[in-house]
Image (cartoon, rainbow, N blue to C red):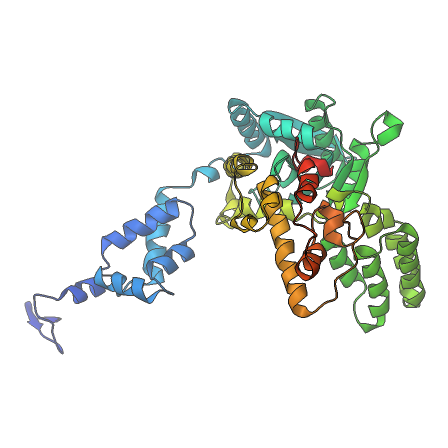
Length: 484
């Protein structure tokens, strides 16, 4: 329509093709999107999903059948911009609860978080330390659920520790201590929030957790990434025999060590040096063999890198080399910080971008909810530990005497034994005591792929009840703590 005013008169004329007064439903949807899609989008965003994910799911981008249903419901003309506009309007009207207070000072946020944690029954304490490097103050907050803290006391023989960033607007770092319980589940035992990533504040947090445990936390091995701050913090918090305590061995994650190795010694010029160090990292089982590999790496390294290899790899070999872990089954089973990395991933799942705007309390509430989910998984693992059985145990009834997660480990080796048989590999000789020198057997002391290959080839190895009684006896009165 065109409206023209001239000499006090108004004329209205039709321009081009004009739709009939009674529009079709498709035309109505094109002019104005049905409100039901705005309501659905807002509801999903309120549940914590990102706008991009909600738009993709509503528009059924990858599902043709769902797209037909979408068109039938009037969503043919729905765009990502429509979803974004609806969600943006809702977010302005309903600011996220976890963002409330994010503009307050860190003292106010820490106090608010402390009050909430105390109300929920958590152990919590603000901490402060003087930085050794510049004598400035560093602040933090230590907190732990009492039930998970008791797990840390029981299973704190071997602990993983790692930090993550971007969990709050203050940019405080979150440290988590994780332990494996009797049923093979990883538990986040305690947490430290720090304004800075220095060793002094982390050491103060570790000392606070030690005090909460009332001398019942007997740490023997701490596994972290290659962070110098974390290594220094552990030495300060656990001085060892000089303080009348158990000596603590600090081990480095093999994955991070490998990344550091490839980054520090790149290119073809360092290839032979890398190969020798990789052999020491993953394969050499004895101290002399490991030292031989490291010395060979020093000898073949370029002249300007020899001092680096000697200082950073030779002098620290007890922290990263494979030989330093071959005496302990649990150290062979857990070579990296992957469990705590998984914890951080689940903590940020679906809210990674939003967390950067949260207050300390909002971040802690998310942590508490995620930890509760991990608790439920651990409870299911505990319930299934001796009650479930794999269907494959029908062919080897003795395997049913093992706990459920142990059956899963053995089944994986059975399948690998079938693969070795199909590949035509020669069976390895087994000793009279039914032992093997492979990594899996040294990790778990259970039937390995080579034993299953021998069973499939010659028979009579794993059919006797006495054999399974021997393996089942390991778990008769305990769980995975036997490997400690």
